Amino acid sequence: MKLSQFTRQLKPSETLAISTKAKTLRAQGRNIVDFGLGEPDFATPGNIIRAAEHAMAEGFTKYTPPAGLPALRRAIAEKLKRENGLDYAPEQVIVSCGAKQALYNVAMVLIDAGDEVLIPGPYWVTYPTQVILAGGIPVILPTTAAEDFKITPEMLRRAITPRTRGIILNSPCNPTGVVYSPTELAALANVLAETDLFIITDEIYEHIIYDGLKQVSIATLHPALKERTIVVNGFSKAYSMTGWRLGYCAGPRDVIEMCDRLQSQTTSNPTAFAQVAGIEALTGPQESVQTMAQAFEERRNFVVQRLNAIPGIRSNTPQGAFYIFPQIDGLFGKRAGGTLLTTSAAVADYLLEAAGVAVVPGDAFGDDHYMRISYASSMAELEDGLARIDRAVQQLV
Image (spheres, rainbow, N blue to C red):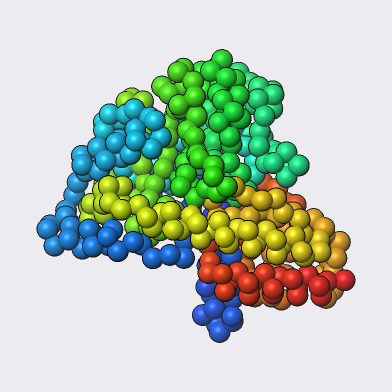
């Protein structure tokens, strides 16, 4: 059967592909440590599960409005005001089947064919693809570990052309774990205030942040930006609800209304009882969020120290999320058996085959000199997996 040109240009998500490969090897009897997928290893908090169970018993198994339950939209608006200093009416919020769908909706609503959208690199694998799906052109602003993986106002100003339509920001960042300070974000905000660009700010990792830092939304830093900013967030990371598929975005009324119209013709509403669970997540006890963040910070400290002790690997210290993006080009030019390692994909393949450790090659995120490790695993798995990586690297010649 002939497939559409539209779908033939699609690539599978590299992070999901690596995880699928790891699961396949496990099913074949291999002992695999999976550092590929960004999924907390904690269970969804019990109060959230009980809220969903109660909701199902009470009949929340039917359609809801496409944009979500009014009570959840209201709870999200209250959360944004309380935690982020952002004042949105519930009608300026739409609930989607995960933050990924929220991002897709916004891309389809804001991007026309030929529009350029700026994306700081390294970037989450899905950002460029979603821009392309909407007919736009992703323009990558590359950064390196030496620059702390952050764009500067000068870099941003140079990248803007008459064809530039918007920018996608992500702090804390997947895959690097960097967090923009209020001062750094304010400097970017000043540049963006001189333009008419839209700003999509992906804040899904806002609660997984370390060293006493606090995530700040760029929409709060300049009065001219709020009406051009769309805030994307969700429940997957902070509440360990990856499989519930519940996310949201907030922004200008006309954007949210068009997202609602689009969603009504695609998925319709997110699962009703999951939405009730989302209300409980936002309004119930928050201790589990803090507990997870503290555990991730301890794991980060261990992983950074352990990686930097491996010859040929160098790592910055991430300040948020649960990923580390170590530089591995020190391994390029070495041989594994008869195979010369010259790319991050080759290194990732070697680690999977020789060590039984799944990592994601850096080229998936826009820089082939690195690889991504998720430390959303138990300390025992981290110790085992990093010891395997160390032994595998020592065997290279």
